[in-house]
Image (cartoon, rainbow, N blue to C red; front, side, top):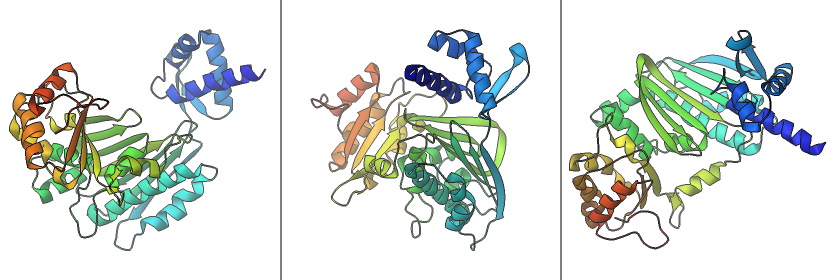
Length: 353
């Protein structure tokens, strides 16, 4: 009987986890995965509907399922210097997290307060909107403002070529337009604490997904005035703030000295990374770190000049900075090896520069 209950729980957990991605096909997908009939799957879904966890629209073959919010709220605040992110957290969000494990509460508090503080200090907007949704599969916080837009503002202040450069720099960390009052670490760590992090501004959508460490930049047809940040995490996640901090800490003071950079963000559209100028754009602000992991996942090829600028020229000019590459395909790895002038160390992944 115990095994039957465990199997039932496993099947229903699978349905809850995948129903958003497959609202029309969840019955067929579940039946195939567990080698059970569609009728049996429908009974599981009906039980979830009766428990108030799933809802649906349409009939028979046109039926679509979706998660039903257990808790849902939305509130707007006028933006001013008197607005305090910790007070909003205590009054609006924290009471809705009763029964949630402490590691999730800590992550939500960190991400929420960092993103709301960005709105207060940087957005130049007049309105802040906060939405919270709690379902059986995820918790989601959305922080949106009607300001000038984060990508456009950083681009203008730092004199970057376009908003795509801003996204590359944000992925590195330690990027701020106000170094006197901010470290530039909030977005970097927040994007890595949640299962899904999404930032939309102007016509760009920037997303990061854990645990696969996937990055995506998309151009949207519809312009979004201001900035919207979506933070989503499973209520059963075992991720911790300290665990994320430790991934990027180094040295005796355990400071933020290590970064992980998705090289694909250095590209414009589907262009290849060929030139030294592209490499120099990627190398910007590397000197602020002691260890750098260059992730070549999604990069099909690179040019010899691009690799030489990073793995020979920069290495010779900055011998104190340790660069490792991961995720490279065979072609990219051969080019990196040639530029570095030596093979990877035994037991290590990538080549050092």
